[in-house]
Length: 278
Image (cartoon, rainbow, N blue to C red; front, side, top):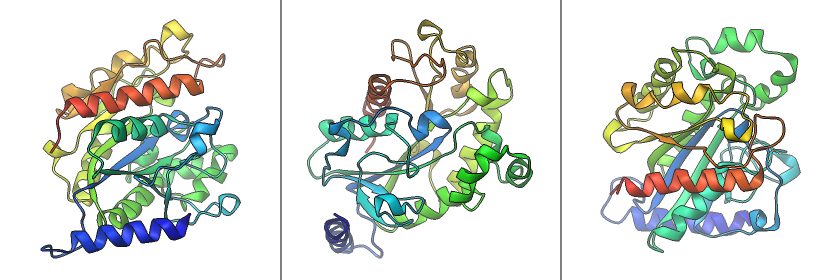
């Protein structure tokens, strides 16, 4: 599988270098995914999630010996897309929906960096160190996968990906741990702005798609956070909110079912497609 990806990426580089000064292929669309457990993915992996599509790629962000995947290497995007033992997330359906609606010449690549239970402050470089120091024991093992700095890992992987393609957007699903935090949108903006600066991205061409928490209709324990999430575009003009209404949830009141993730991911893609990005 990895051999085929190497061939595919090599082809991208060959085509991209024709008339260009470095290896960016405009037909390889890269999306950065980050957040907490619903971006990690807790859905049951089904057969369809293990079938590869040569146009749907993953740049692995952590070493996973059990999956024979290595950090910084390209693979077909099959579940799990985050850690070594996570489940289906919204990202799978996001990518598949995009591929169903763009020309066959376009490929989609994901980078997924997420930590279950984390606050948005974990991704703020001014507070990462103190956050990690005070993190609960159950979180420390996941943090070690990113050398205790998930934001830095996003940037590291994104710069590798930028050698091959073009970053077209950022997907966020985070907020359960910040429920009631009226300053959340400013904290998100700080992380978003840092990504734009560190990766030399244009805010007008880099939408931030942010999903709502599990809805009250589905018994969402953090559904009150959705009122705060929906105000994000007031702070980030190119932020777009993804509704979770009707997306099936698990009895824990925090996470979506596999079907819920599929619907939520489809909505992320639908919103992006309506933006008519070049």
